[in-house]
Amino acid sequence: MITLTALAPAGLQVEPDAARVAERVADALLQALRDGATLGLATGRTMLPVYAALRHRLAALGAPERRALLAGWRSFNLDEYVGLGPEDPRSFARFMQEQLGDPLQLPPGVLQLPDGLAADPQAEARRYGAAVAAAGGIDLQLLGLGNNGHVGFNEPPCSADAPCRSLPLSPATREQNAGAFGGAAGAVPSHAITLGTAEIRAARRLLLVVTGAAKAQVLRRCLLEPPGPELPASWLQGHPGLRVVVDAEAASALPLG
Ligand code: GLP
Image 1 (tube, rainbow, N blue to C red):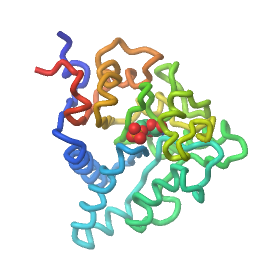
Image 2 (tube, helix red, strand yellow):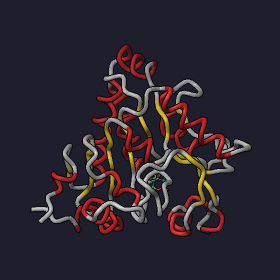
Image 3 (cartoon, rainbow, N blue to C red):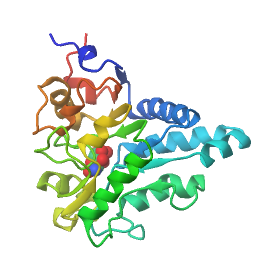
Image 4 (cartoon, helix red, strand yellow):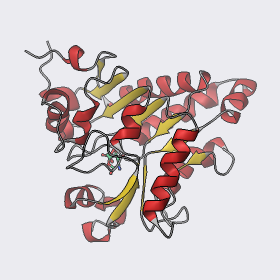
């Protein structure tokens, strides 16, 4: 049997439920802030309890330490919808503002994302990729998992070294994210800007977070099938700093013990 530790040297961690997953991930984010890391942040429902747990941890700190950590905050988000700006409640910029920017009172511009309103999305993707590189790359990249195996918005088929770019969203992804757009997949923007598998794999540490039974099969395939373009997250295999934190439901298809 293939052992998961061989695929993910930094470890696979199975927690009983999503709340416990969030606690572990928030611990890792807090430690990264203490280390002065450049964070790679993600959006999506999986991250809601994670950011809630991080807010609680920060609130529990003494004021001097909290102030110091927030003053040193540096982060880049994975992706944004083309055509949506921070004023749009469905944008990832607004998601981040609501989850972290406003509650933590981070100064404007600290939570960096691609500009969904840029006139030329490909040029914006190049600018954003260059900004990540100029910052020295990502130290800790937080990742969710799409139902079709995407990370960020790297839709299949996707090579292992795709750069930051604008690309069309797949029907499966527009369906998955329709909830935020009144339930209609057709209302989900047709394109997004995303950090590529190149920038993601260049991060020093990766933290893949997966919860819920609906993702059990795609998680199994991404971790155990040979890496390939049809499952973009499979390109994470073998990354020396990959840590995978999942709940029992998401782990239910893995050959554990
Ligand atoms: C979205 C985002 C991804 C996210 C994934 C899972 O489309 N682009 O970054 O990780 O899909 O989302 P959720 O956590 O809501 O299942």
